[in-house]
Length: 112
Image (cartoon, rainbow, N blue to C red; front, side):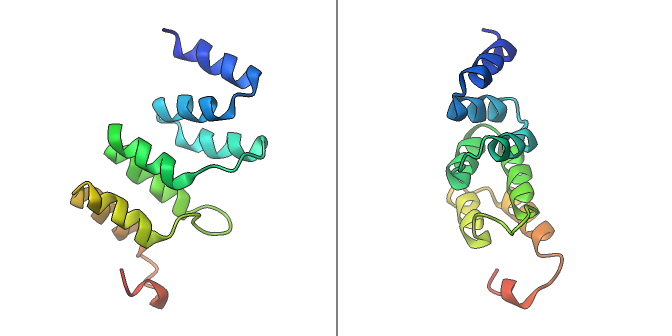
């Protein structure tokens, strides 16, 4: 019933997958990345993107854009992210993602 209390309990119990799910439900995607880095948890970014996409397509775009700006590069290939949006016929969300990540106009993104 109380999402804040549940999140506190999950953090204290070190139930990392539950913590990630709780942050995703609250649309606090930046906190997911920070938390996973703190506890040294390897996140399945593609699965999380697909999960967010079911309930919040715009949030999925924001999460995909956050991934694209991560240190060391995006953990999921841009082509894969694009396919995830296209599989659900989310053309507007896919276009918003591509317009942002393709701004540098790099030759290696020519296929997109």
